[in-house]
Amino acid sequence: MVATPHTPDRERDQGFTRLIRRAKRQDMIFLACGFAVLAMASLTLLSLIVGLAVQGASWVDWQFFTSFPSRKPEEAGIVSAWVGSTLVMVVTAFLALPLGVGAGLYLEEYAPQNWVTDIIEINTTNLAGVPSIIYGLLALGLFLFTFGMGQWILVAGLVLALLILPVVIVATRESLRAIPDSVREGAHALGADKWQVVRLYLLPAARPGILTGLIVGMSRAIGETAPVITIGALTFIAFLPAAPIDGTFPYLNFEWLTSAFTVMPIQMFNWISRPQSGFHELAAAAGLVLLVMTLLMNGLAIYIRYRLRKAPSAE
Amino acid sequence: MKTLKETEQASASPDSFVQPPSTAGTTPGGVAQSRHADPERDALKAEVRDLSFWYGNFQALNGVDFPLYKRGVTALIGASGCGKSTLLRCFNRMHDVQGGHHYRGSIVLHPDNINLVGDETDPMLVRLRIGMVFQQANPFPKSIFENVAAGLRIRGINDNTILQETVERSLKRAALWEEVKDRLNKPAFALSGGQQQRLCIARTLAPGPELMLLDEPTSSLDPVATAKIEELISNIGEDVTILIVTHNMQQAARISNYTAFMHLGELVEHDDTETIFNNPRQERTEAYITGRFG
Image (cartoon, rainbow over all chains, first blue to last red):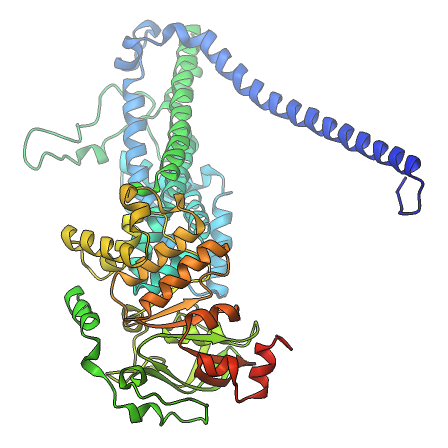
């Protein structure tokens, strides 16, 4: 019942009480639904972790991290896989960051608003939804068959960088858009040119968001299997790539870029497809490690966002 | 690009390019103005000549003429939408950041007689010489020190001694030094609204502007913070030309030496603040001042 100015006081108060009771009930229903959904999501993740841990935790030890794959489960390890994953991630980050930030900056700060940039914008968003196997096929056709590259760490880094590029571009654009125009106006009013505004004011302010986007993208890339298999990453690697840093001038060695490699998910896939149960437990152990790596990267993203937003004076 | 030294010299010897008093009276457009015995007061810093301005197809300014005297504070008053902020932003070409605009006429900056709104004039050059304080305090997301040093860094000055000296001097001129001297490395956002606006004034003063534009700088501040900023503006006006937009007529009366009244994109009247408020020539001015419209 709706109260009007002419309703007697008592009747009006009863009407209000009913209204309040109904609002509170609806609040409770929504709260319960939200909690149930959240619980389902958390429980799924938790049961996944617990399942992997129960199966594989006993295999995770020093020997597991330092051994190459082997025909005997008790001697097998993931050293070539985690080193491969790490190196591929390094390449991915180095390629995706400048490309993604450059594209985001151009689209947000420099590009005119017309149908060309509209098309670019729509396509960037669409790229984020392209299945990763398609990226693998692109890499196979372009990098391997056309450019004659091999089954290299560099190629894996390239394809994964392409895969996460939309994420980095969108993160860059959103962080730039979140900077109030008053900052741009203030900098221009002091006589800054466009690049100075970007370099001195926009990029530092957008950095937390950009880095968060990059790391979130990388934590997706580290678990990707399909594109890496498509370019022909090997499943059984019993050697490590040449170290990136060595004792002779100029101390940097780029041979590792063209080394054959394997990555964590491929190693897992390889073990799962074997009949012996020992290998299944190894796969669970590797899955556990991969999950922890992903969680650590997401944790790092949250930390960076928190840290850089809290202390802008560090500039 | 002007170096710090040159800027200091320029502000240290404000008499070096005094215009003969007769120039002040030759402004076209029939805008009312008075003469003074003091030649220093009558020296021109800039002249707006038949300035019209369009946002796209919308004409926001229509044939504005008025002189800007070198000493003191000139206030631009008028109802919302009358074009006073638009006119202010012509002075440092802020319109050029967005684009889609068009100027006609000129704003001549003395002593070198460059046309601020001319196609031949680089907007960046204009902004390197003319500072601006905005309606909302807009400190950068950096430390207090870096905010004040920003203008110098943009001009390529990174020498720590110079930066420290300039930051201290500018904060003192903006009456903020005592409040922040112990926390120069703290984020600027930790300051109160009034302090942030004074920080923005210090930031604008640091590179030594010839002319300062203020766009309703106290409209979002409480009366105490407003009073501090008004006092500050009067003091700075002693040696920097100041053009301030305000919708608060008491403020215009309190702090300005000259007042220009605008209405619907036109400049109705420009004169001594005293004359405008006590004895305006135009009926529209009187109507606005006495609160009959606007």
